[in-house]
Amino acid sequence: MAKKPVPDASRRSDRSRRAIYDAALALVGEVGYPRTTIEGIAAHAGVGKQTIYRWWASKADVLLEAFLDLGERTAREAGQEAYDLPDTGDLAADLKHVLRATVDELRDPRFEVPARALAAEGLVNPQLGAEVVAHLLEPQLQRYVQRLRTAQQAGAVRPDIDPRIALELFVSPVAQRWLQRTGPLTHAYTDTLVDYALHGLAPR
Image (tube, rainbow, N blue to C red; front, side):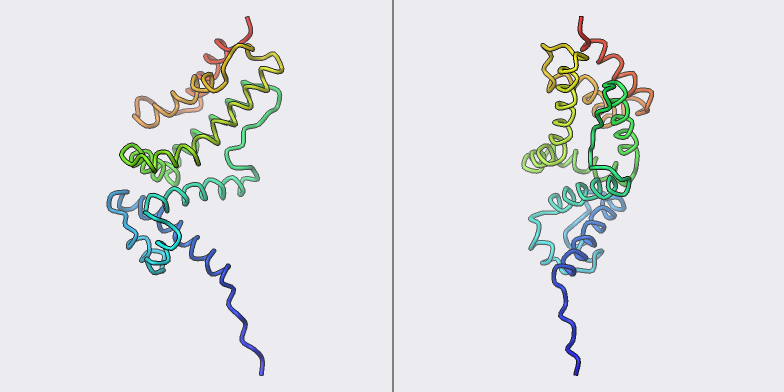
């Protein structure tokens, strides 16, 4: 008599995690962050709520991990590393490329809805805010720092510039315009930010 196959617990866990990620992102889009609950995520994912509590402490933790996973999956599907910043030797072109991609992502409802939920909750939940900065924002900012340092070494940026401050000349205005909806978020806008910033950062 043939033995029954032994269930693969790791594959079952991966399927459950994927279902929970998808459920969290879908619910935030459907009912908003305040009305999204662990119980709702569990029901939507077809798992018990204890399964979620075994891996995450709160719905905010679920949503953050789901959002990070979404970014990584989307990048892989495009054949890229998540939040990759190119180095072609042309600093302006590289910055414009990545900022245009950022604009496209911020305008994509799949990203915009959970991103706004995380940003809003992070303002009133210091622990979540710190995790968003550490796991989502800071890795991206460090890529800008490294690219600007490479440009300094190549003589394209003044040697006295602090890259961590300089990157805010084009990153912070994008974040502010997106968060507060003070104007249209377009490729032309981010291209102009890069042109203005690099004029100030160029060697004199």
